[in-house]
Image 1 (cartoon, rainbow, N blue to C red):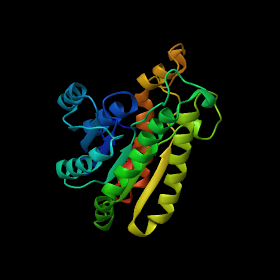
Image 2 (image 1 turned 60 degrees about the vertical axis):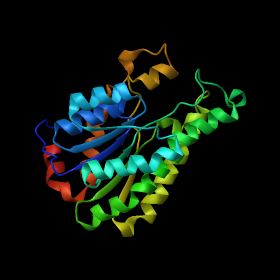
Image 3 (image 1 turned 90 degrees about the vertical axis):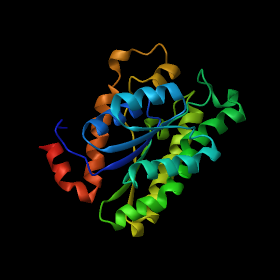
Image 4 (image 1 turned 90 degrees about the horizontal axis):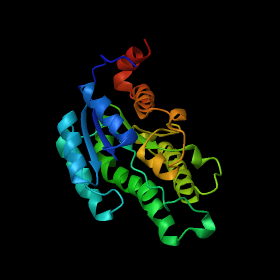
Length: 240
């Protein structure tokens, strides 16, 4: 992906924007001129990333139902609408990872609340804004960050894998249903990355074998541009 791509007309909302893949999205999109609003739970981290990137920081918890409409309103207000929503925030469930028989019901619920319900609620709250963007010819896209754990049965990853599998299928259904509104939905697996979430899950993993989240973000941004009809020229430039 070329560094000089200009995304000044693009308005992007991102959850989980202060570490790992989410932080890479915020940095790269803001650097390329997009208007970015990101969400994370810790005020100090939100302030730091906002100061670094110039993006709009929102302190909130995607796993709390009462935070969803305030998040949606702040994204729309700060950006003047929204063209792309990246549901990136994720919860592992039990830490250390546990077999399903050893997973508490509340731990499974916690993973589902963030990885599935949080993404669903925020997308639903922003659906009207996305449909408006599509009607204006800007394109509209929801990217849900998935995982190979959504399709492969990894022992110990039950809560996370089940929630991501549900998210992937939710994405496919919503993509079929929202065609008339001009909104596209993609579930994308960035691969095994060197992120705090991965370190939390597998603290002894060899980090040299893991993908740099900056590279994963660049790859997904290319796919994002390909999916936005109003940015065909930019997508062509990304592949030049």
